[in-house]
Length: 116
Image (cartoon, rainbow, N blue to C red; front, side):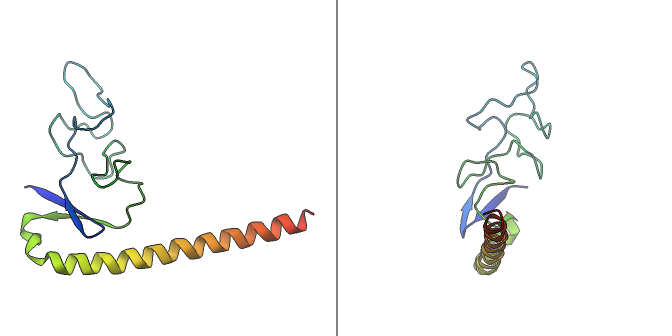
């Protein structure tokens, strides 16, 4: 079944194995993904280290594109609902990241002040 990725409110086709810019082939005679084992032209499996984000081109599982949804064709009829939900989740995620960064900075500021 064909899927689309919803990233920052836009739909993208997944980057299939073999369409990446990098060469991540585990066997030249029978090329498969070196992490998840799919063949050329197939969609990477969930949590594959090699899969690229179609929005930014970075590693899909760790890029900065926020919350990403994998939608099947049958879910596209509710696209507006998914976009709204994703927006809320991304706002919450960004707030958590900002709070964690502020705590980190405060902790390290106090540590560097005490070292003086």
